[in-house]
Image (cartoon, rainbow, N blue to C red; front, side):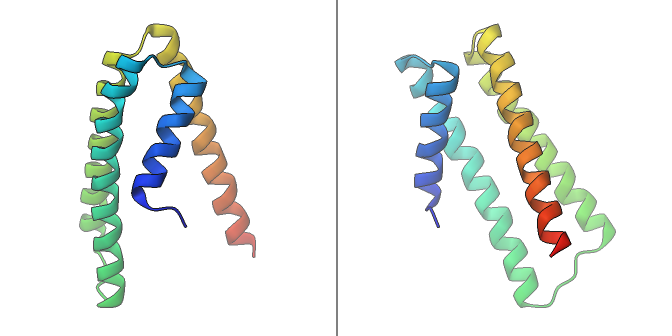
Amino acid sequence: MKSPEQRNEALLTKMTTDLNLDASQQAQVKPIIAEQSLKMEAMRTQQKANKVNNVVPTDADKKAMRKTRMEDKEATENKIKAMLTPDQFVKYQAMQEAEKAKMRESRERRQEE
């Protein structure tokens, strides 16, 4: 399993290749990726701790977590949009949709097993 730093570097490489980022854009996007990664890692750590301690989140907790995730995602997307050209942003959105479809497919396969 890749470390968070390795995942960040892999995402930066993929974005650089797929979106044809220049050096300036790479320097701008790297801290954005790192920030988002830290937030997601903190959320995963909290979920694991809840599971270990047999803490079942309430519906309100789940809604709050989902809302926080969506707000973080939107803020990250806005930061990335600000540094990309319009064409690059269209490609970025297509990358996001493809990744979402891939995750959905993976989740469905796991549920079938």
